[in-house]
Structure formats: C-alpha cells, structure tokens
Image (cartoon, rainbow, N blue to C red):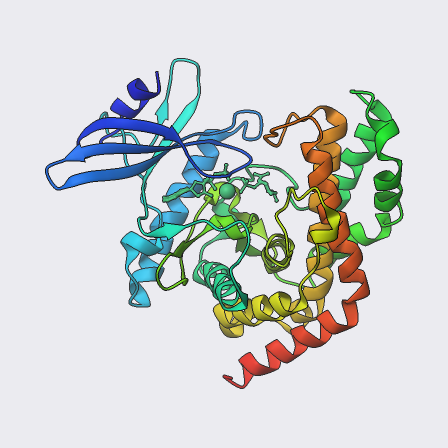
Length: 369
Ligand code: ADP
Ligand code: GN1
Ligand code: MG
C-alpha cells in the first residue's frame, strides 16, 4: 500500500524502500529510497494527520505559496534554495499532492541529505544558529501577505483558548484520569492569568501580526551534520499569521531543556540559561532590524508562556484520551506535560536573568556585535 502511494509520485526512479522516519508527533512520515542511474536518492513521504488538519487542501495551498516565496528570499540572499527550502515533488499526474481513495492527503519532498533533526542541541553554538534560522524564517516572510494564508488550526497559539480547552477536558474527564493529575491541574489553574499575555498584546496592536512558523521546535530545523549549522526550516504545516513571540517562545521551550521532551526523570530536566541567551541572540540576529522594542520586552514572558501552553496541551490530550499527539505508551502525554511544567517553574525562578539576557542580546545585535 505504501509502495503504491509512493509509486504515484514523480520520483526519479523505482522505489526500493519505504520506512517510517523522524520523530514528529503529528503526521505519518516515511523515507523513500529510489534507485537511479546516479545511485540511491531519498525522498520524504508524508500522510497528513486528518484529525489535526481538517483543511488539508488549505494547508497545502499555504505550503506551496510559502515555499515559492521563501525560495526567492533564499536566492536573493545568495543561498542555495535546494538545501535551504523544502521542495515538493509532484505526483505523476502533475498535482502538487495526492488525495487517495480514503481522502487521505499525501505529499512528498526532496530529502535534504547530510542533515539531521536534533531533539536536544549538542551545544549553545548549535542552538544559537537554530535561533538564527528561525529568526531568518520570520524575516524572510515579512513581505508575505499574512491575510492570504488559511488559518489551518484556528486560534493555534491563543493561550486563553487553550486554557478553555483544558478546562473542558477537566470537566469531561473522559478517561477517568483526572484523579492522577491533581498537582498538574493545580499548576495550570494557578497560572490562568498568564494566558492573556500575547493575545492581548496582539489585539491591542502593541505588537505586530507577522507570518510565523508556529512550531519552532528544534527538530523542525534540519542541521548540517558536518558544520552543525541550521540549513532548512521544515514542518510548514502551521505557517499562519501570528507573533514572532510564538516562534521565539516555542523555540526556547523545545531547545533550552537539558533533557528530551519526554524525559521521565525530572531530576534531569532543567532550563539552561546559557542556551536561552544563545537562542535569543541567534533569533534576534536572524530577524534583523524589524523587531520592535515591545517584542523584545515580551520575549522572556513568551518563552515561559509557550512552554506553559505546550504543557497544558499535553495535559489536555492526556485527559482527553491521547487523540491529538502521537503517543508510545499510556502516560506519554502526562510525562511530556510534567517536563514542560518543570521548565516553566525553573523559568519563573530565572526570570530576571532571562530578561537581562534578552536585553543584552538585543543590545549586541543592535550594535552589530
Ligand atoms: P511532523 O509534523 O509530524 O512533526 P515533520 O514535517 O516535522 O512532521 O517531519 C518529521 C521529521 O521528518 C522531521 O523532524 C525530520 O526529521 C524529517 N524530515 C521532514 N522533512 C524532511 C526533509 N525534506 N528532509 C529530511 N528530513 C525531513
Ligand atoms: C507538535 O508536528 P511536531 O511534532 O513538529 C505540535 C506542536 C507542539 C509539538 C510539541 C501541529 O509538533 O504544536 O508544540 O508537537 N504540532 C501541531 O512537541 O500541533
Ligand atoms: Mg515536526
């Protein structure tokens, strides 16, 4: 069946292998190998998650428009568009993606070789450069008209909305799991007031609406295995109108931990301020001079809030029966929620230092280092 799907894409040769690939929580991702006269070539084949993305046609329209635009931005700055930008491989019928007999949507992209998606950064330099790539991504789309993008997941980073979903999951307690999460529930409820921070700043126009990635975890940028430089921002499913604070905050959430997102031993999970400073520096460097004072001021708050939001989403999914994120075992979402809350606690403790690091990074970038 997978070979039949793969055979419908205009790959450069006969498909010899299709294997599950990567660590994404949402789509079904496969690496496809094909034999060609020049040797083996690889592609990425993905079935888009129908539960998470009801409007997969809108999603693909966004991806097509965004990659087309980014390709030009990469060329304009003298980069290599084949490595620094995703390229969709059309179907043999000439369509940009495939809809199968079940209504499932499949897409294929060129495999960007000699890169890796990291779950944890090797060091601060690697993470600084990931920040640079995510910042450049936002800057590269600054002239893209945000109003032309479909809102693939409505109110995706509207944390008030996420809190409401959490409260509904608590009230429904669909799987009888509420009894196991008293401490986590209390943790979330004590921070209800934080949820308005970014939505309100956007609504009051204190910060600009930008085209943002919205899912800037470290493994959504491919890193060159030799140079350790970030080559290509991937996973464009959630590119929508948003705030740079979402991208900065989510990047910190995912990358400033000393452990993996699903580490069970919380003694290993710490918020690393050195990584935070490096990411802030990289991100602001990548964004260039378009960043505003208010955005800079809110960056440390956004880091805390995006981490809190993600923990709340994992907990909501745990209560709702693991219908959204892929899980490998029954407590997986709870384990993930706990790591996020541990990071939030530590960020609360380190908050003054985070503010200092952000302002220093902004100063450095302003002075051109
Ligand atoms: P998900 O939405 O499920 O996270 P992604 O689009 O992020 O799906 O893809 C999952 C993983 O597949 C990535 O983390 C990365 O390891 C790998 N991947 C995706 N696209 C490519 C590509 N074009 N080249 C190489 N690896 C890729
Ligand atoms: C999901 O798709 P992936 O695995 O890169 C999720 C993000 C979460 C992240 C947590 C569309 O990202 O929002 O922050 O898991 N993506 C979607 O690891 O919900
Ligand atoms: Mg991903």
